[in-house]
Length: 133
Image (cartoon, rainbow, N blue to C red; front, top):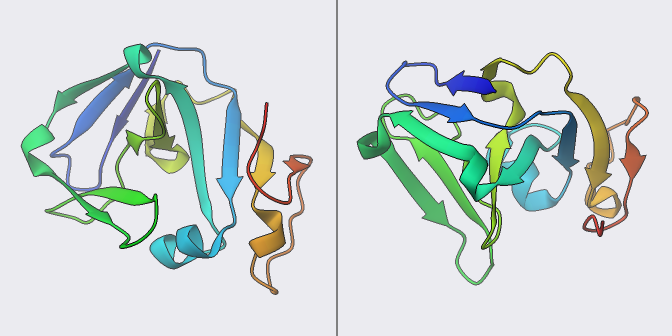
């Protein structure tokens, strides 16, 4: 089990899963959204995720013309977990405050789109596009 919360403390969640794999997306949308080299997330089954508080503070933005959406806290702006697909939720890895001791970057996705200044230096497998596995 893992617990997570945001900067302002208004939103919190619980994950009922053993966490190990971090995925880092290097696509241009994730780079612009994070202001960094990408977005690091864990992906879990929907039934392994539960909001503990603050759902009324969640807002989102959807990129026009794209199948991409971002969820964040409307108080502090911290990124929040969101819909990965019909059966899975993604959780920004930096939000996991308890239970993330075994987390390791295992996959870098959309590496073909990474910033020219981004040098990947860990042992995570690099995928030119999306992870198929």
